[in-house]
Image 1 (cartoon, rainbow, N blue to C red):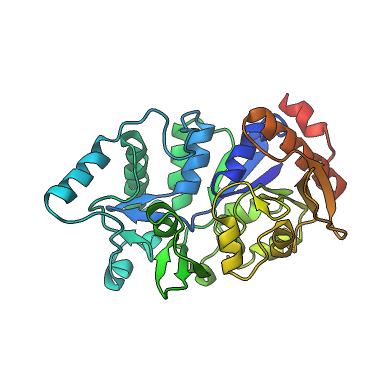
Image 2 (image 1 turned 180 degrees about the horizontal axis):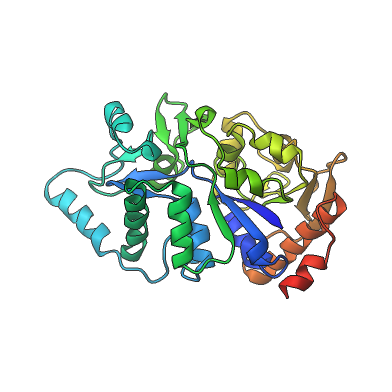
Length: 344
């Protein structure tokens, strides 16, 4: 058994090759939900859905968001209505009273759908409608995601990190507090980051399924340490669980150069060095790291496996996954080669 912590695109890309190394049926994926938003009354779970769509074979792999070849008629009509009625476009964050009046799982992340600021395809929207409806019927988020995973014939066990609401909020140097999706999607990471808050994390809990998954060896892929992995680490008990099990992490940096996304700006914003060394500091529980062969970082107190860590396709993902397998074997997380033979 092996468990992946997934957020953004880094770990989902790694999962493409992990299926050739570990049996997917014996693989759990704990997905970040700090990025989730309620948009126009529907709960959107970007990091959950990237794994869902990738595993279901429908992910748009050009954008690593949404469903390939999806239509956007509803989204386009929402934008047209907003323009025609002179309602404006862009994020329209609902007020404080509305944040606490809606369904609990949506707290601190509720947006109006007027002029919808995130492009959501029509088939993609059906997923959000189904998930939200299941929540309104009384299901937990874990149960709702499980039903969707069945609909997409997912082999891995996809688990949202919590059934409780956690919202990743960006505090800017201009004094604003905005949701991560507004920062990343609407503003294209333009505001300078002063700090990052995981609102609700202290009162949230990892689910029993997540706690069970974290007892197995863990792989943290090359996801953003702040906004993809950070919300999971902010949950009570998660770091302690990771300290008690073998953990290998893949750096999203090569030295001080990040592969993609806003990880460098976010790490600097929370006072961490935007580098592989900074990632190692952020993951004190990690027993081993997989670093790029050109990464000059020395981690004398951790086991290190080196390979080309760029992931452009499934073969790249398999190469990095096998380095993770060797690293786990070196720190007591399994015997290299044994799981691969089962998977093949």
